[in-house]
Length: 480
Image (cartoon, rainbow, N blue to C red; front, side):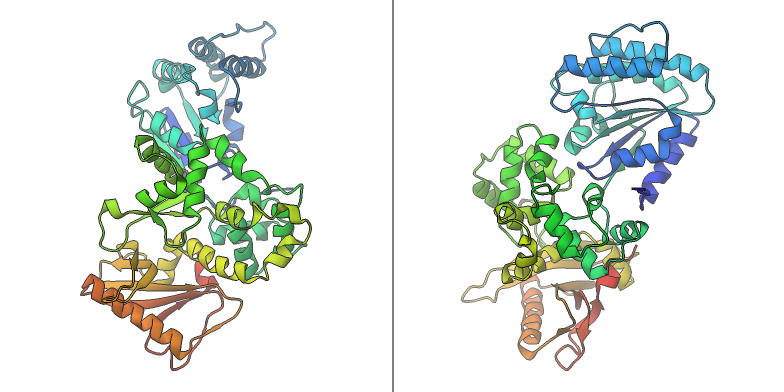
């Protein structure tokens, strides 16, 4: 299958600037498993490679060095066997010798690519010491781009981007790879000549998010429902058992990460740190702080501030689409066999869950929402609001607010439906009460503007008139 490079315009620009720079560059490419990091680098840089190696998962230092020696011999193309390294300092010394010959015999800037670097450097192997030596004693003075890439985002940030040793401040450019947006997902399907509607694309996105490697499994001659059945529930389906593999490939001692993901999956509006720890049944200590940071930096969870609250009131929300879908439907349904999703997608359970999942998708597409509202250039802070009902106060929950610098607060209602929405008197009054409750609780002096985001639009009537100021549909979420 011919797979083009979709989107990634900013990322491609960074790589091109590094290649055209008159100085040596060290580029860090960071992003979660299967998001397309290696594909981007190889698509843009393959003709310029003079050395490429990818770490081996769960391999000892000795096996990693054997792998390095074999790879280096391949690139050396020498009739005389090259010296074998038995530690990383020697390995980089020998690499310097081999690459010097290649640089002397070539024109233009060349690329040295270390993929899955956290696997190469794990267990205090001495790899980072070797990389420090390689960069500071040789590469920094050469016409090269050194690319370092890894799926363990937190490890990459802690050990390289924020390194305080010999590699301190040596990263010259950073690329943080994110999943495809809805618009990019549609571009990918069109590149494969798939004729999906936007509604079908959203159905697929709710199950697997914008992870390119997952989207490669989609077949254009099947419906969205059939594709989810094949990919998520069939015995050979890629996503049937991806969940644990995903976390164990990214994090050491991943049980705490999985426990937090499971805890957050139980809450629609998100959980405080204390509630997360209690539900996950893990100790509340510095290690838990690190686990939360790792999950956030890797793109699985998102931290939100409730409106007007301080940091200690931060809420964590699970925003990885596949994890949400797996825990709700795949984990306990794989044994039910063919047609599982065709049945489940018609149930009330799915209708309720899809509304929550669609809200999560909207939270990930705030730039598109701002463009559709014509406020891309207006500074705003996204937040949430929740007030529990008591005898004295009305309760209200708002999953998305945009607090704007131009003295307007956009209050969002988000609805996933298979047709146009028609407001009745009861719903209209409930939405109005929510606005009043928010205004009363926050004492805000800003104007409140209600925005409805839905799939196919709204039937305008007396109940929506004067209440819904802006209407956004799937067309707006697919804006790039």
